[in-house]
Length: 270
Image (cartoon, rainbow, N blue to C red; front, top):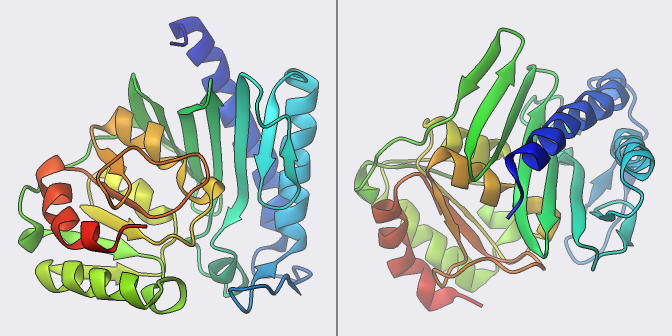
């Protein structure tokens, strides 16, 4: 376990990394952003100069501050992925939202210690929010100050507000069946928020998020420490701890709500 002094120092660095990446990203938002299509199995897979520049800047700072740490990032791959400390980066999660001018994209930064996610942040610099946390607590930093994050109780899936990025685009046919069952059992579903929906679970405004096997580690690991500090829970579709390679994920503020969703999800777990 990390000491309180270690967590405080790393927590402060996490804030600095968010501010540094924001300085790179914001000049491109709702302006010319140098769009490219990475292509691949998912079809249209956009990347912008903001994605590349922000990850490069985060890596530069980490190399100066902690040259012995490893880094895994969406844009520039792996560097010492087996190190004791490994940073996992998605400079712009929700690039589709970014190029559409919608302020629900986020910067995801998480830290593994001895292979497990222990610290993470979800930053939305246009709105001016950094959601961040670890097992000892989660909070949101805004232009007005800091506020503790706490999930809300919702023991009944039938009363839950749920979310997913885009089941039509990212879920395979079997996963879509599982999503449709969970959706039918819930009160309200919202789509297209990417990892900003994770932050809303921690903030107590959304109750449950379901994502597919298309997710990579940089898409989802940040949820583990954030949920731990806010009182929520994160598992894969089998109800087990998520692995280091990404994959299917479900998170909820209330364990009872998550367990009800797992009734439908377990049959389609991979």
